[in-house]
Image 1 (tube, helix red, strand yellow):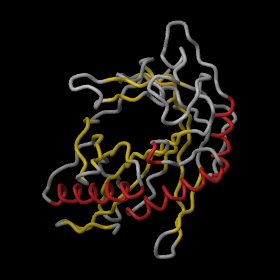
Image 2 (cartoon, one colour):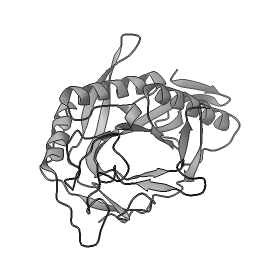
Image 3 (cartoon, one colour):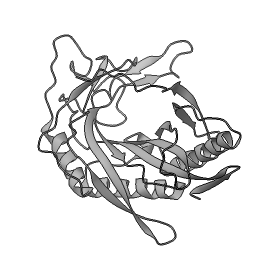
Length: 281
C-alpha cells in the first residue's frame, strides 16, 4: 500500500533508507586493531580507538578500496577527491567526543539500485551518497544493576553509510531495496550483511505527503532497525501512526524514534526541530 486515505484526501508514503554497512577489513578505519566479531569486551582496542592523548589516525587503504568497490557496484560516481571531517557530538561510548566521518565531499556520489518487487515489477531507487565513517563503541546496560559499562571493541570500525534518495513508496519496496543492497555488498565482499550481528543496520526515514502535491511532509527517522522483517514492520507502523495523526488534524513532530522488536512499535527518541549543529570541520 502506497496511499493512505484521509478525511481531506489521499496521502502518499515517502521513504528513504540510511544503511550503515560494516566494511570487511582485518583492521579498523584509522588503526591496526582487529575487527573480529564476538571477542571479549575491550580486547580489540588500540590507543587510537580509545582516544588517548596525542594519538593520530592513519587511514586504512583497504577500507578506501572497499568503499570504491561498493560504489562501482551501485553504478555510482566515484569522487576522485574526498575529505574526512570531524562530526562533533557526545555519546558515552564515543571516546574522542567526535566521529571521523565525511560531509560535503564523500568518497562516492550518486548511483542507482534496481529492485525486484513481489508482483514481478522492477523499480530503480536512487543513491544519494556513500561515505566512510568510524563506528562508535557499545554501551552495555545489562551487566550491572545500576551501572552502564562500555565496550570499545567496535570503536573505530569502518562503516559505509549508504544513503538512498526518498524514492520508495511501500514497505515492500523498502525490504526489496535492503535485500538487493545486502546481496550487492555480499557479492562484492565489502560487507558480510549479517544484520543479526549488527554489521548492517538501517535508519528508516518516512513522511506522508498529499497525493500529487510534490511537497515533502515532516519526516521521522526510526534508528538502528536490524532485520528485513523489522524494516517492513517499522515502515507499516510509522505509516499508520503518521496517517492517524494527520487524519485527526494533528501535525507530525520531526524526531528520531526507536524501534521495539518485541512490541512492534516505535517510541520517541529525541526531537529534531532544527538542523543539528555537528560543527563539522
